[in-house]
Image 1 (cartoon, rainbow, N blue to C red):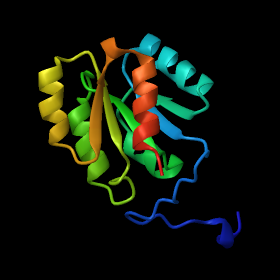
Image 2: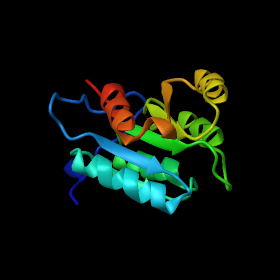
Image 3: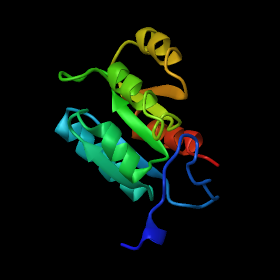
Length: 142
């Protein structure tokens, strides 16, 4: 790799999204079946998808992949989605990436939780992947 190929990532220095560009998304869920079905659906919808079945290291993957959105399950055994969101927000390179909490949690609880996380929204798993995809496209829009 030549030095000229290196891009220095700085807070707020994400490349502007052009209309029609491929949406890049990271999906994090400890349920492998849900993770695979969501990733397959989003890929068929034309998104560039990376997955993780554990929240550990997601911030580093996000810094390297530079996604347009991160989809986080809220109730994961190793680290809850709200804590992962705090880690993402605490890193200058990833602090501006929109977060979509995707959860089976009670709507009132997730609504309150997501209000405490900047640039975040939520989709209930019972709403389905169509709603999730539309939400990702909305938050990733230029």
